[in-house]
Length: 388
Image 1: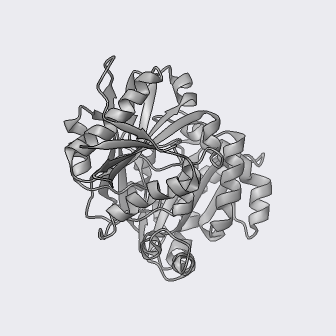
Image 2 (image 1 turned 45 degrees about the vertical axis):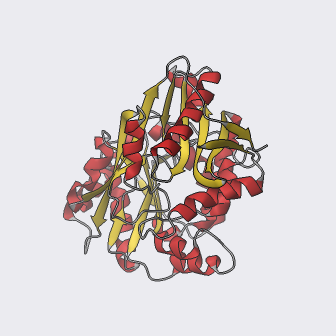
Image 3 (image 1 turned 90 degrees about the vertical axis):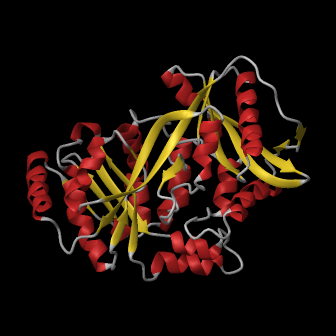
């Protein structure tokens, strides 16, 4: 019999919730663990500003007193209000290969959603778009990244067995770093530079980029991504947190900002050395020696770079601005010894983004999916104990 327990938001309970995920994949060579402290902060209402407009509860499944699965039930009220939906989300979902376990976890979220007045459940999604999202459905033999979910091949089979159908897909490309800047990009970059009066900015000071462009950078993301699937607009509190948490980690050689004649940001490209191997060695922990592996990942030899973010202001999209980013970043990649770039997830219908990779002969090597299930008015719930 499966027992579903609600998990409290104490750090000790959230640590157990996070470690179940890491333990489930401990022998998998493609899984990249999260930083435990980051996942705990994301799940904590006192740490994550997304709780200003989200609510969530967490559940774990037990059999004979042993944990066999976990799931988060989330509502993003901001997205629901903007879209007119009544949608709950499931996320942070992991389970052993047992349909009784996955059925109990999903049924719990569905019951929770009904009680909140929702009429459908979608997922795997987290609180916002800067969190990990989507169930891997292709590319199970490919190394994951720090920004994505890895899951076993049986996950999509379980979701479909329990009545979930495809809602949206993301695709991911592996891109070979060229030996030099393609002639086409050099030509386009010069044209758009002159036509729109654009400038390429580089920085040597994190304080300077934070003070002069930090907030503007995230407001650009809001504008560039506003029409994308399930996009959640970043609030000022979220922006402040992202600036404080992440700008200090960036290699500024791999950050490029494009501005117009009025010094307004019109495009940004942010990448960083792949942290996949470092996170595997650290098992998501800083201590006792995790910090050393993570530092080596940031500063040591690495042949792979993660393209974390490319954003262009809507009125400049499909006008060649991305060529300016490539012309600046490709020499940096070559100098640092990168051979491959990971695009990270892009919506399969987002041709504006995918067209920019055409010149590099990309390989589509992963696909991930969000599922949806429309709810009936009632359903039976498995046995539940409160962990609070």
